[in-house]
Amino acid sequence: MRQVMFVGAVGAGKTSLIHALEKKEQQVAKTQAIMFHDGTIDTPGEYAQMPRLYSALMVTASQASLIAVVQDGIRTGPVLPPGFATMFARQSIGIITKIDSPEARPEQARVRLLESGVSGPIFAVSAFTGEGIETLLKFLERRCDNE
Ligand SMILES: Nc1nc2c(ncn2[C@@H]2O[C@H](COP(=O)(O)OP(=O)(O)OP(=O)(O)O)[C@@H](O)[C@H]2O)c(=O)[nH]1
Ligand SMILES: [Mg+2]
Image (cartoon, rainbow, N blue to C red; front, side):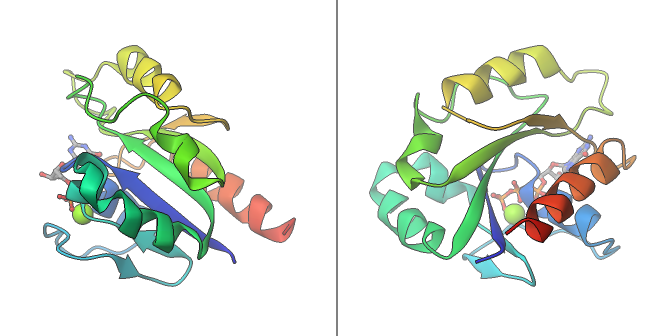
C-alpha cells in the first residue's frame, strides 16, 4: 500500500514527472493504459477527463495510499470537475508541472488544484530542470517511512 497514483489531464506531465522522480532519462510517450511501476501508478489523462472511466480510476486507487493530482502549469483552464480528488477516499496532494516555462501560471494552477479538492500540500515542479523534484521526493519518502 505504498503506491502513489498520478492522475490529471492529458499532457499534464504525469509520465515526465514520474521519470524525473525515478531519475529515468528515457523518452516519454503518451500513456495508453494504467501502468504500475515500483511505487508509482501512471494513468492516461483520458481517465481523468472522461467520467465514464472514473470507475477504473477508483478501482486502481484502492491499491494506492496517496493520490497525486497533477495540474499542467501552462494550460490552467478547468478540466477536472470540482471535488475530483475527493472521490478516491484517499489522501491527496497537488502537483503543478512545467514551472520552467515562461508561460507557466502557478497561481492559477494552484486554484485549479484547490477546486479539485486536493487535501494535502501542493508542490510546484519542472521535470525538465528538476526544480522542486527533490522536495517532492523527500515528502514522498518521508510519508512512506511513516506508513
Ligand atoms: N516545459 C515543460 N514541458 C513539460 C514538462 N513535463 C512534461 N512536459 C511536456 O508536456 C507534454 C506531455 O507530457 P507527458 O509527461 O507525456 O504528459 P502526461 O500527463 O503523461 O500525458 P498522458 O500520458 O497523455 O496522460 C510533453 O510534450 C512533455 O515534453 C516540464 O516540466 N516542462
Ligand atoms: Mg503519460
